[in-house]
Amino acid sequence: MTHPIDRPFSFGLAASSPLLERYDNHLTRRLASMAGYYLDSEAYTAQLAQENSLVYEVYEIRRPEQAGELLSGLSILHPGKVGTEYFMTKGHFHAVLETGEIYHCLNGRGALVMETPEGEWAVEALHPGQVLYVPPRWAHRSVNTDPTEDLVTFFVYPGHAGHDYGTIEKFGFRKLLVEQDGQPILLDNPRWHPPETRR
Ligand code: S6P
Ligand code: ZN
Image 1 (tube, helix red, strand yellow):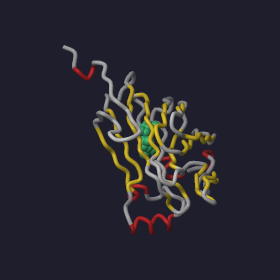
Image 2 (spheres, protein in one colour):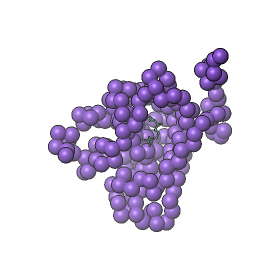
Image 3 (cartoon, protein in one colour):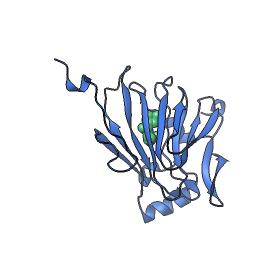
Image 4 (tube, helix red, strand yellow):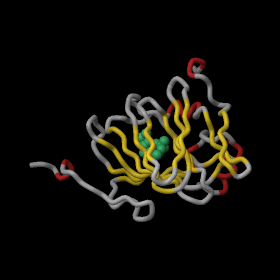
């Protein structure tokens, strides 16, 4: 007999609540889980002492993590900053590097910061209705540049992709998004080193 999970299914998607009609897992990332990610470590420590803010949430539709499957869900990145650096996701390479991802922005304003293992970089704007294709091999991080709105994106990626956080956790992305005179600008990340000089 066919298991119900192997039957086609559909679900509603909306930028406002209820965001996903159905989901299997709700993941939350608070400031405390992001030690070392923001450039201004003093601002990070001071802000964390005030409040362990909710930075982002992910609602996942679970499927077997294997080739042929597609994993999808909703990412909600709240507005905020640490120092002048906008709230962002940790960011990752896929463990199986040759796997891409699609992001569809439903609400808010921001960007996806991306880079390859060789150090090539790209920053693409996210706004409602925008679909962004992340090719295989490109690490990706969402950044919310709106002062008040959640950045809401629906994502889809291959079931066997997996996640590799280590490189980004250690060196960050090549480019940072910070606020200057009320506007987002790109900065070179001083913690970043060319891959060939890393150890
Ligand atoms: C997974 C996909 C998203 C992120 C989510 C949180 O491949 O890219 O579901 O997991 O946006 O970001 P991060 O970097 O903490 O996994
Ligand atoms: Zn991903």
